[in-house]
Length: 172
Image 1 (cartoon, helix red, strand yellow):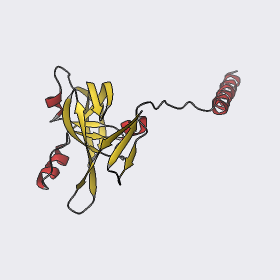
Image 2 (tube, rainbow, N blue to C red; image 1 turned 135 degrees about the vertical axis):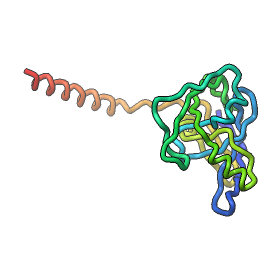
Image 3 (spheres, rainbow, N blue to C red; image 1 turned 45 degrees about the horizontal axis):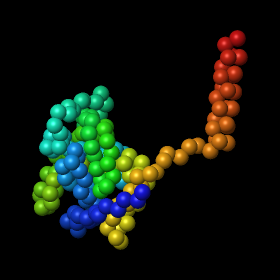
Image 4 (cartoon, rainbow, N blue to C red; image 1 turned 90 degrees about the vertical axis):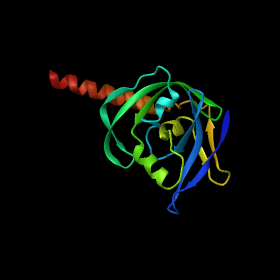
């Protein structure tokens, strides 16, 4: 099923645009931007509490990079229902970061704060197409992950068998 979601182009002081999209986190409307260069969809640490009931943030062992910083502490949270248009993702494992530097910049230039950044994980999973002319984000909810071609699988198995055979003969 093809799902079309309206997007808005936010003018960043004549220096380019951010793509804004309305999403829902646990049924509550949230403000997000689309970032094709972001590897993961992330939620703002300060703002996520508006959308959670009993869900707890769990600190991750590793630091995250990007979003204009060298590294920052990240957390994870299980979001019961994450919606983009008519697409509902249940029990979504969300990454939570401090996006205050983005929201401070938005405040200075007169834009509403963001609650989330929709990243490439979601865009790739649902075969997203951004149509700037029509100002829409198109997602495909019935996209299945493609399996590797049989030839590729056979070749990979053959290579693995050879490596195992060589390592066994070296041990003797």
